[in-house]
Structures are given as C-alpha cells and as structure tokens.
Image (cartoon, rainbow, N blue to C red; front, side, top):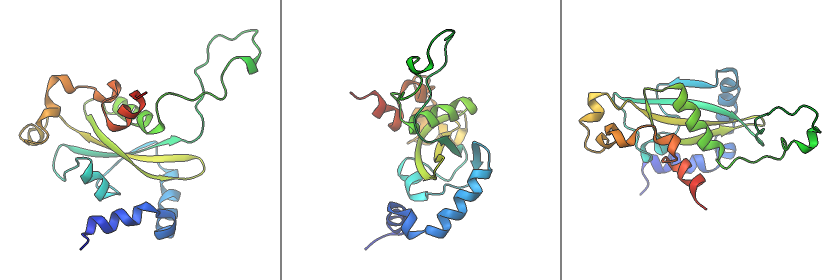
Length: 173
C-alpha cells in the first residue's frame, strides 16, 4: 500500500504530463520573482523530507534559479586577441548547475548552512532548485540528535568544500 509521499513522488517523475497546468502557472509566477526567494514550505515535501528537512525552527527553504545552457568563462584582459581564440564559448564548468546554485545561496545567506537541495522546475531559460538551509546556532538544531552534527566546527561552509550531494558528484572522477 502506498503512502502520500509515494503518490507525490510519482507525480514528480513526469511533472509536465501529470501536473501540466500547475507547473505552467508556477513557472510563470517564478519567472517574475527574484533570483533567490525564501519560501514558507517546500514545493516537493517528499524530496525535502528525504534530504533531511523537518518542519521546525532553524530550517529555511530558498528557491533559487540559474540560467540554463553553457557557462561563460570569466573574462581576462584580452586586448588584441581574436575573440574566437579566447576560449570563452563552449566552456563547461566542472560543477553542475545544481552545485553552483547551492554555493550561490550559501553566499547569499552566510549565517545558514546548506544541508541539501533538489530540482523543482525548468523552462527554456532557467532552472529552479530549492535549497534546504539550517541555522546551526538555533537551540532546536543543537538539541536535535539527528542534526546536531551540523553545529560542530568541522562542518562549516560545507557547500564550498563539495560536501553536499551535488558537490560530491562534481568531485568524483
């Protein structure tokens, strides 16, 4: 017998077919919003719970967007150089867009620690991810036996060291 979360997971396997009008309305709304939006509840509660989210104080969910497609290599002083030889196009970063979003959110919210993130949507221009952030100084987190590890000193800025699930994939060879 299936539970509620399993039905939600099945819907999210093919969202453009199962929730077509809902996805369309959401993407139209999300396009008008800022790049980082703090939200009350996760859009995909099943995925958030699987990645460690709990509905308690100390948890923050941020929906972040990133442009789709190839990345541009940072410019350098290319005076007198032919643009086609500058190596700016066809550049693929070593990190996935998923890992890049996590790092950007971590810089935006420096007092919070990134626990994990998951995909929520895409259109022709953007991809959206929801990032689970934890306030490691909150007493609710420090007293939680499953989460108090994130309050320890060695777990600071873990997203920048490639210790989230998206970051670990980028570190594999």
